[in-house]
Image 1 (cartoon, rainbow, N blue to C red):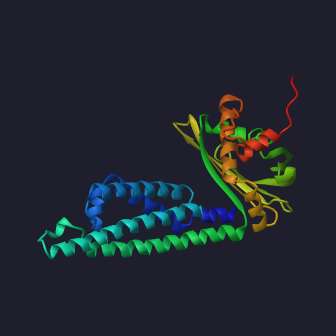
Image 2 (image 1 turned 45 degrees about the vertical axis):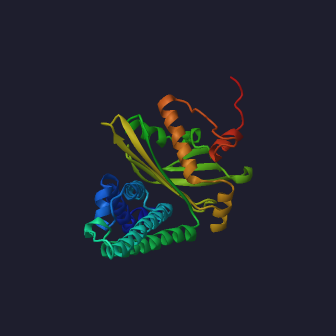
Image 3 (image 1 turned 90 degrees about the vertical axis):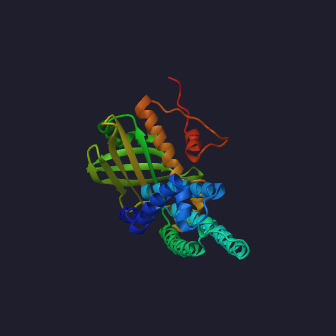
Length: 318
């Protein structure tokens, strides 16, 4: 998990996250004022576009601050930069039109877009776009070179942290809600033996050890060499609502056999670790809050975890 921890604290990603959040907030709350600040005439169309771009910036900024290691969010920032440049390009055309009209009909400078101000803003946004592009490419290449599959998800459970921690700490119960797990058996001294389902009806096994543990706060583990599928993960338990509920944050990373080739094959087979983790946490929430899992297939095939659930042998009637 050392690589994952370093990525989550990437200063460039954090800076972009705060930048998007700050700029997006101003754009969404005061679109007319922002239009004037960058030299764009505040019209119903320009303010509506400015507000829409601001909402996108705010959403992306929040996502980056929560998951700064995800290259996809930085690519979304690049798309937002393109939207900004499009808006400013329209403003430049408007400014040129106003200058041509001014040669025939006297107009006040403030009636139109300030062309020099817009040009300076275009230059600044273009510089930020290049930085965004470089950061997105760097994170994308890091993921490709690593050949690992990663997932991170958070969920609020309506139970105290002590109860949530105790439920997760009982590792042998993890297969109750983690659909890809066949079994987990504790072997002592913080170690355990895991058996998981793999594509094409196969199974993989490995031993794992707990590498960091703070009761009611954190559990971190990693596979023990040699492992067919090297992996690591951690769960953070944070009390919320005056301790009546717990926000869980789970991070997972594993390396499919075959490196980048194995990763590509897993993707083609529908193995989306992010969706798997979300489904697993949803079932964990159901188990700890209601004592059972409510299963629902929203599509003919369902998600990969739902398909795995259907592959489990039916339990004989009691």
